[in-house]
Image 1 (cartoon, rainbow, N blue to C red):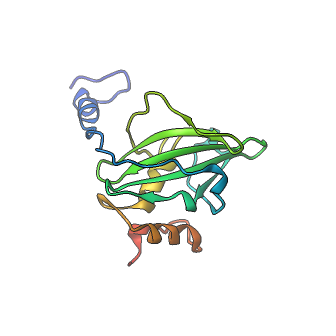
Image 2: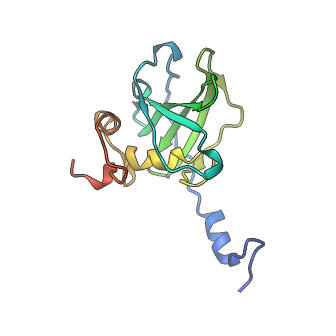
Amino acid sequence: MERNGRGLPGEVVDWFNNNQKAAPAEAAFERPNIKNLVEWAPLEFPQLKNNNRNNYFLALDSLSLTNDEIVRYVVAIKPTGGNVTTLVFEGLDCASHQYRRYASASSTGDWRELKNSEWKINSKNGHHAWQGYLADEFCRLDAPWPLETIKKEFVANKLPADCSGCQTR
């Protein structure tokens, strides 16, 4: 069995490389106005050891769901020892298990569109692990939960192991 430089069989690497689903077709949408984002909920998820210096928050009033079934949202990233908060506007597609970052901003600035923004596979590993954990809360299998259901998950007191798919709706 041929192995690549990471010790994985070549067939496994080929499967991962060729298994990415096509980018979803997107409906028209608008970026939320940063000044109107006032409903923030803590976003907690296991982080890499070298990345646990940030606090994350989800803007509940940024959540949107258009007929393309892509959940769009804003996450704020605030370093525990810093004053600058970074905002990211992203979309999460439950059907393809992918996310896309559309724009970023400081909490006092305007959105900056990202050039070459591409759909990427959700992951719970790495620097941007929140997308994988948000998928657990936003998605029921290959479709999104209704927005009101999603919002309740971030307002209610939850145990660390609770997730949308683990509860009866």
